[in-house]
Image 1: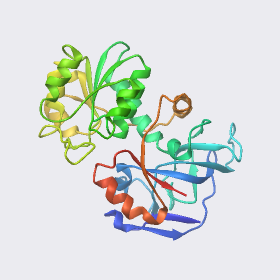
Image 2 (image 1 turned 180 degrees about the vertical axis):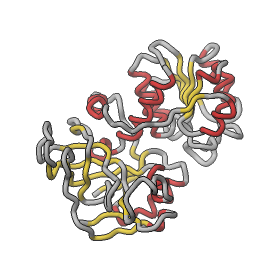
Image 3 (image 1 turned 135 degrees about the vertical axis):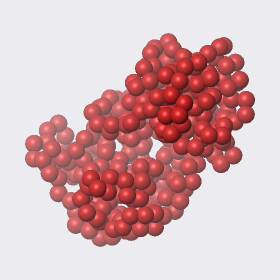
Image 4 (image 1 turned 120 degrees about the horizontal axis):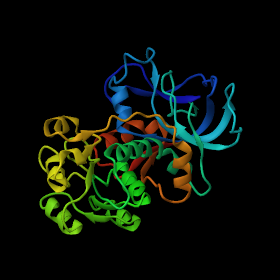
Length: 317
């Protein structure tokens, strides 16, 4: 089968498309014929050497979340059949991962009717991160939550999950995703100078809690939409009146300095069926900005690393 691999750490230039053996599912695993593989900042961190001392030797595969058709079942697998459509995290501790013609999964859910493979493959990491961040922040129904960086995939997912929980949401976002966020039910304002004043006016006072989902350093959504110098946390603390009511999923250094909260995401993927249900009901929908074929990986990586992809980037087979 064809698969993307890297056999040295460094930039995405190390990634190559090769013909490799098709992996066999172990106990508790399934194999899918991949139709879509989501790309994430975490992919480039893995290529750069993240977890290098915890995983087997190189070469290694690329791609952490996938969707496709079940092709083979490992020992002990129940509740799924060959031919079912499934999505979830790809195993990435071997020579291949999700960016391949076939991939293994140890956690999965069925793709709901009306949801495409591309839409399903965009869900796992964004949904897991946003769900855990909302739980760690302690957001309660009827509270007012500010989501900063809501134009990111995690940010928009957090907005949609919070609204579904009965939370009132104000979102900061650039023009790319503003209309979609408003349609989902959030009040939306722009980044940049005067953001705190605009949020205060929308809130009618203080917000109860704030979630920072902007990429580290404050750059969000577009090159010309940048949050205040040093990141957004000072403004978010001012808006809530308490650093303990502010949580970031990215700006850990600023959080440590200012006393804000952080969430270290533990990708357990034990809520996959719930994510599938919410996607089928239209609650969860991660925007897919562009699709690429496997041999276009370097073009995709360049846009992903620009921090302004405008949504999820997807490899399609």
